[in-house]
Image 1 (cartoon, helix red, strand yellow):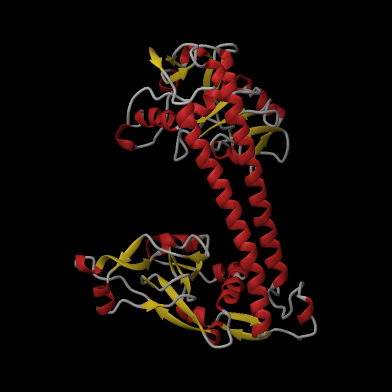
Image 2 (cartoon, one colour; image 1 turned 90 degrees about the horizontal axis):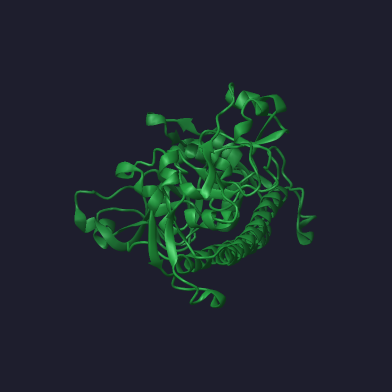
Length: 427
């Protein structure tokens, strides 16, 4: 494979006029394309320390995800030293839902191994820069090539012959490869720094909530704002005394007049954030006239049926008037109850809510409405509720702002990559 005459949309000044790029096959540019194996015994042989053992979940989009990295001992490592990792090996996920994710091996995992779901691509020095290869693999055109090997869109697996046949657009000199690699690596470093900042805020937020709300069985929190330290214990109550619980419903799918209107209709797939501003599906005024339930801004929604309940209990606070389906319950705060405070209080008690989830038909989770009504909580006076809510809202806003900043940098990098790499063919 050798397709010449390629030119990127943007080129560093010192390389303008230095010749065209060419699409070249990956195989001849490598000294190794291969994956490892899972040790006999699987997870039972993993250790708390030793040689890093990299699995597909440890390979992200141009980053290593090592929070849950496994380890193997020297004896196990010695049984498949052929897959020992070196610094600058390119790691590519080749099976499962994460096919196509790619990252560079660094000193943290050098000397470790990979399992059969991760391919090691070791390039020839002086011919292909590993960072350039990694960045191209996760680019739009790189992913298109990887997808093209999956017949019918079933991302089942890549074989080594397919990987070797990948076409990589390369500039005429290694210096230009290095320049592009340095540029994109600096953006990756910035993304990593922003992600660490965002994760730190998440950790701080979680820890603060654990201290602002009483632990199970207690009636005062470990951390209290100064003006409320002498306000006494929080009041013991249950959810039925704090909210009115309302059920939702699904307008008839057979009537097209009920759908694609202007009114948000919430289902489980929408409940991924605390402050819910919109939904994927919308219904019409005709559906409202037919009996669809509308609840106002400030209402809490809690999921009461679905697969999600097997691991989480989504809770949202509506930022506008909305409707919702039958697998969601609306919690409308009564007088003297600050809705945002109640949302945070329920989030702080999610572990207890999860213990109430039963397995319903088809292996879905079910949260019983009577159980919700009887769910016991402790609550302070309205002024303290408001103070806690204001504090946590500000912290959530800061966390969201950091996430938006992270997302903006990732979008910027994606745009830069589309200009730095020439596209072999039009979409």
